[in-house]
Length: 450
Image 1 (spheres, one colour):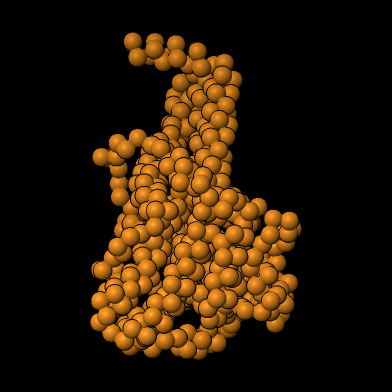
Image 2 (cartoon, rainbow, N blue to C red):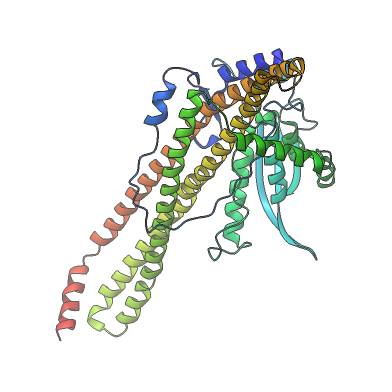
């Protein structure tokens, strides 16, 4: 257990902070327990006016579990431990590349579902080959996420796209929905691959390499139903009990998470509303071009002017469509991903509190001498190590996640701002280049007066 404590402490001091998009780990950040961390928590909260009475509410999904922070399945060889701890002077060499593509529909007598091809290319020695190709369905991704949460309850597991969507928004097997989900699943796997600890999880390796029947067999090797029920009951009991004294740094984390959740949910709703209004504006503007073409057939004196207007409207439509595409592909997915992250963070804090609550309960029992003191003393020693490992894992991952979040959101809004500037420049150019607009407006006024 002392070895686990030392490994956890090394991990907390050496975890790198990820770059934008979480697709490549970055340089090491500040030590989580440093004096500047509490000041940063409040300063970095996203600020936004909270006038949201008329905003729509969108559904979210996140599954939460509870187990020890360090899985027995984690690699314990010196080489694997070195791989997990990244040092500042170590070059960043990516050795695991994952692609999710080729969605395929499957129809059975019982259900209809989609599978995705997953191609993995790697240079790691623990893999039997340098390239793997498997097919996975959404339920397999859910299984992997659950196993990661079991093995690492206080690490921040990347979110999966929701299983269910808002009714009436889009069909479940619509091409756009499938493509959006494919991108989200690929990001989920690549975020795990780039994580300094999760990337070495044995279940993750099985997910990437095992054939379908092998994966099914591996799933059956987990704890039985009664064991899982027992774990769930104990987790609920500790959750209901609560913690007596949460450390101040985790109180600050919890306050940050609550405020971040409010702000990012508000941004998500506003972004969705803006996109909806843009879509309505675009659909209406598309009708103006054909209308002016038809009009030009009945007005000989305005033929050139009306056709010029139709051409301008058509080009403005294309520019608007491009801007909408940027909004739906660059900004909306990033914002909504962090809405899901906010729920995951709440779950991580809850699991950390459950581990501490279990320790508090044993300490209280020892104090009141309600059980065998020797046995309780041994259990308390183990739980103290467990709490320390859980806390160190969370503090290290917290700094990494914050850096990723700041980079991702900054990049998304910067790209969107540049796209908007380009859009308005295009529209202004189209309008100012149409010299016949003045004549068109004068003739239009004359027609109205007559």
